Amino acid sequence: MLPVFRSSQFLEQHVTALSQFYQQHAIDPQGGYFQALAPNGEAQEQGLKQLVSSTRLAYIFAHVGLQENNAEYLQLAEHGFKFVEQQHFDPKRQAYNWVLDDGSPIDKSNLCYGLAFVMLMYSAAVKLGRAGAKQQLAATFELMEQRFWQAEWGLYADEASADWQVLSDYRGQNANMHACEAMIAAYEATQESRYLHRAIVIAQNICLRQGYTTKGLIWEHYQADWQVDWDFNRDDPKNLYRPWGFQPGHQTEWAKLLVMLSRHHQASWLIPCAEKLFGFAMENAWDHQYGGLYYGIAPDGAVCDDEKYFWVQAESFAAAALLASATGKQEYWSAYDSLWKYSWQFFCEAQHKPWWRVLSREGQVQDPLVARPGAKIDYHTIGACLEVLRAMQA
Image 1 (tube, helix red, strand yellow):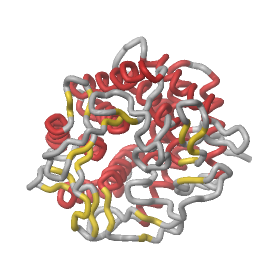
Image 2: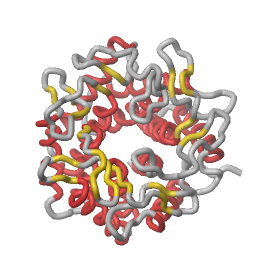
Image 3: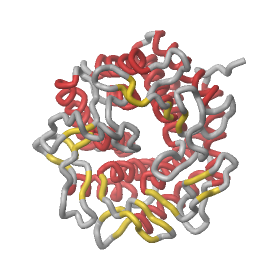
């Protein structure tokens, strides 16, 4: 018998169980979090720390700690905040080290995507009332402003060299999507209008202007002048951060963000655009034979990556629940149930356990670890449940 996926009790149980796994197995007494974990909790590659996983897990501990009034989780969040400040941040470069190994930087790449998650982390620190957090949030925003914001396009550039001297010509929607997410969180934590304004500008420019040449859908890759780059990584559709093709999971993730924005900004385009993006994903990327959403869809509509990724299903059930709450349409709850039913069977194995990261089309596990630096730390799964709970309580 399946659980009642729409019940707050089920979602709270899932959040608690996943958070407890990381509480029990991910805390590195030397600082930060272990980020490569086997299903039994055994830590692999213990010295490897990647910025996005470091900030995401601190964010999760902070929010679950607030949700459950759990003082220990709030301490574990602080453990993560300190590591990002003291180890990832390099005051000489005024930059955050992308990857550390045993405390030494092995990759100093400057990525807007990474700074977006530093902002997200500090938004959680503000909510906790951490001393100086509002200033740290503002300082990260200013760093993004100085190094990546391009006012003529109303969007962020993607990547700079370690010394900040060379800005890559690559432009991507992914960094901007997570920047938008960070800006919404920053606004909700501080009520400072500049963050909300920036979120709106990013959303308009990615979802409306850039979507004008892609039939209203979100394409991933662009040239320096924000012209669509149809060929970037065409030969590498499984690239971890920059895969080729339309990403169904990014259509639904944007749908979720647009509904979140609509709580604070009354614009007539937000919900219809969210509905279109979500509808595209469910109509074109749902696997009717094996269940779940595919990872990549080519411009001609063919499936270009038939694997199933955990975050795609999680972001999609969150989007479905938020759209159901915003529109009152039952079809979104039906989609929510379908996504959860598939995920519960294949990603969770019908248990409240960390999800597998990636499955074959048929449902075979493709990665033996349940956490991997920069790739998975159950941020999407726990975050999606928290967002659905929030929508249910609204």
